[in-house]
Image 1 (cartoon, each protein chain N blue to C red):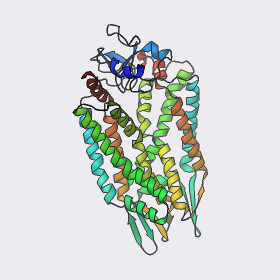
Image 2 (cartoon, rainbow over the protein chains, first blue to last red):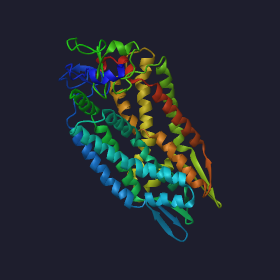
Image 3 (cartoon, rainbow over the protein chains, first blue to last red):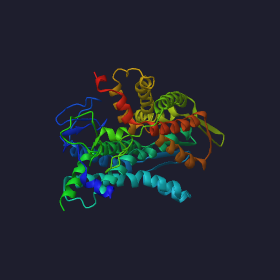
Image 4 (cartoon, each protein chain N blue to C red):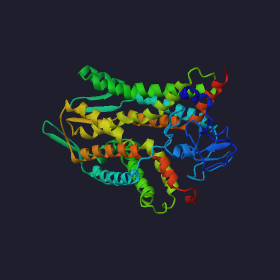
Length: 213
Length: 214
């Protein structure tokens, strides 16, 4: 009963005429510009937040295109040179008989990034308009997106490790392709997009949705 | 509702505001350990542990030593058909230096080594005086805020998982030996995870009084 009621009856800092610090959780009277405990800039709701989310989101999506069309790894052996994209590499791994790793690579480099693009867009649109049908979902989506972002860097690190180790002069050589940079940038921009969210906006929507019935 | 505050009460420092959802709590409920997470969004507000300060300082110092070692010692050794190559963490980051990918060298070094190191150093700087009941260091508040904002960008754990994937990928092709640095790095990741578990930012902020700014 406590938990069910909690959603409805919470007093927010803004309603109480206060502004909370997002870094150290200190409260200050509304209108204070800087937190007196940690010195961070205070704002009750970050109105420019969505604009920044979309800006970083676009940058992330744009970088994700070359990350998939350009080669990620260039393998040079005595006789031929072979360059593979992210998906191409995973397919090759699958064909060579290691479906497990192929799956990890596909999830980390295709599943997670695309999922993040979609969920950030969903969150940003949901904050802007429409009644929230399942408020809990918004919040958990946000937490997952924020937590999972950094793990996409795995693929970049794998490429780096492989490229360093497989350096046998002319016999076999692996070098990172341009897609590695594009992919790393895409991950960073998406992380910045997720961090730009002012999570309190999500809760304002939830509060409003609760007040309607 | 009895625990949440009335708007007429004098403001700070009697309140704690959930940084994620703006819910307001009276400081007393959090202080006495009656409330550790926000009731509606479940963000952890406080997770104080006894003697955590000393432990975190020690772990952070150990982290710094391990990072220094992990940079230069051999990380992985690969052997195939008479060829042998050894890679240190520095080499791995420098693998991108061929061609136009220098930006990635900087980036990899930053997120795998530099940022975790800076974070550990900042934590030592902020927490050591607190552990010994001294006055907080100069700019301690700013230093701690920086340490907390760097947290998502310290990707040592991600790199560790990357190692695992890369190892499985090449063990088919060649024999891979794990160097000293690899083990140091494994310990390093474990230390960082424990350190993050024990660090309660609310307790630290409480110990740093508002007057320490300037």
